Each structure stands twice: as structure tokens, then as C-alpha cells.
Length: 127
Image (cartoon, rainbow, N blue to C red):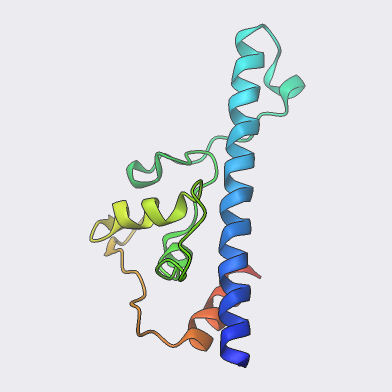
């Protein structure tokens, strides 16, 4: 029962992280539109530019660290919400090489990975 509660909270956290990233992306797009109309970046509240990463082109201004994204579990029983994008990003990155100074292969936790261990690692990364 406790494991099920932890798993449900973990899925809720992933949904909230995904929503946060999508909202920040919308703000960045709004800022770009305002700048095209002549507003300065200071007036629009533009986010600072992130280093380019070809695997995270869906969320260029707010990348999710690959160590964190690797903890994303497979879809819950009812599936991810329709607008959830992190699962697609993780699938796209699967097998690719990530990192800055030392490149390593992106690895996502498997379905048999212990729920409590995964949640513990996620809370450490997110906290």
C-alpha cells in the first residue's frame, strides 16, 4: 500500500514537472513575440538562453538534466496525460550520448526498477 502511494505521488510529480516546463516554454514564446513587436528582453521577462542540446529541442530554454529524465518511469496504468511531453523526450534520447565534458549513453530506468529506490533518487535530484 505504501509503495502504491509513493508511486502515485511520483507520477504526480512528473506531471507537475512536465507542466512547469511547458508553462515556462509558453512564457519564453510570449517573450519572443513581444520582442518582435519592439519590446526589450528586460521588458518581456525573457529567460536566459540555455546551452543548445540537440536531444532537448522540444524544451530548449528549460532542459531537464538527463540524470533526472532517466528516472522517468514508463506510463502509469491509465497512461500519461495527452499533453505530457517528457516521455517522448526520453524516448527520443534513448541510446543517445549525453553530457558536457564526458559523454555517456542515456539510460532510462526499466519497468523492474524498484519504485521506492526510483522515487528516492528522484526526490534527491528534484530537491
